[in-house]
Length: 485
Image (cartoon, rainbow, N blue to C red):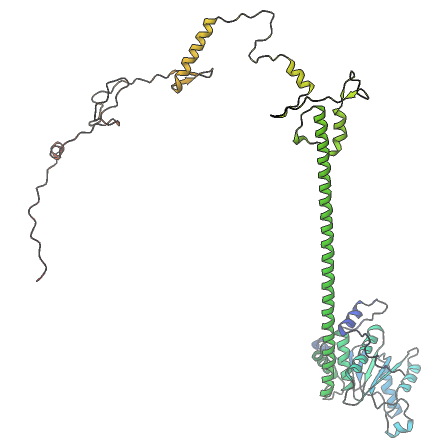
């Protein structure tokens, strides 16, 4: 015999969700396959899978968990028949929830009906006779009939049974006296621990499979309101613990995420700072190389251009090219000596001259308009011809913008205007005076500059010339009426 004692108060126990998750994530050596929860419609169609081997038994999880009535009677033959039918379904563990069960009750007591028969020794004998090699276990957790025990105790016991179903291959037969109240309470809690069902769903499923027995009894499972209240309390406490655990896990995950973000931010800031320092270092090195090259070029007498700043890698080559060969200078250590630049004037732009610039400046400058070199000596032009040409140029320039541009860049003679013959008298429209020809008589006074002649005539002359009949003058107006009397 084996009895499961409740765990020590205050020890760490997994919640329902953690136990279900641990079962799903356990290693293959420790995880056992649990049958899935089928819908009520499927269970109704496959009813025979949930009917137990006796009249008062039924499967809750086919092949793993069976719930029923007390499997022992006073008659030996009937007792063996009941136990053999249960053992033939593969049962390996008997769980008794009856407080009135006494495994050491004498035969005279249970023969007379003063006590219930201890059935476990008979089950062991039958298993050794008909099922060789099967090892049976017995678990006793006493609960008063139609009553309950402490919530912590029943929760710990039901959780231990759930762990056995989850981590072993045991097939459990769970019973009380009739398999209704106490067995139904533990069954609901097992459904919660194994599948995470709430109290209402667990009690509805337990009642549905309970009514599939061969001889159904119209009774609730769990049977009493006290038992149903205990199921609701234990499940609610477990769900609250799950919520607290989920909240703690969420807070922990949030803190870990914040720490990870802060660590990542620091890494990014460190990389940015390193990149900034590297950039400043490269800029300082480039500026130092540029300054050194500038000093070297000024010392050598060459012209410095800021946009042609050499890179730090090209500095040795630049310094090597600055040296100028001068074998006559005894001060040079290896025949090389730098060429000194002339002193810089105190004011005005800085002009740095090299030896090449000096050589070019010392050469005679040839005019751009000088004739090509020849052996013949050119004769100077005649003086009167030069004066005539100058006078011609001055006359052209004095003409102003009225002349036309010539090939040499001056102004030509004034452009001649085209002389048009005057129109005939028949072609001149009436009342229109043609423009004054160029070079003609001056415009008479009072003539507008537009070319039209304004003729002032009276109204009577205008009507007679154009055949207009004048209107008769209007007669006298009628007297104006006064206001009505």
